Image (cartoon, rainbow, N blue to C red; front, side):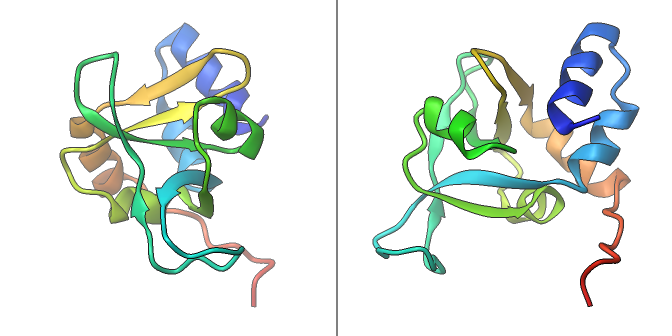
Length: 127
């Protein structure tokens, strides 16, 4: 089951245990702002947007680049979600852009909880 299916199932059932485990082990695209041209981006800042959910600032991420582009992202980097969650400031939330008009919102307070209570599984294929 892919991340999108896990997120949508969690929204329906209210059980988020599998969501956090799956999320921190997934590579995501994230919208960034940079002045660097080309595919190798090392100097960037996150593209922050105001949430229609609660007025907080958030970053937009997606497992699929097309979904990120549809949500307005123009430049993106790809990174492990656990690393991304540890890179963002505590007052930021995360919107995960899904296919269609769906999204999954993680409010700022929950980001800190996910950071403290989850750990990614080491990728055995790297080495």
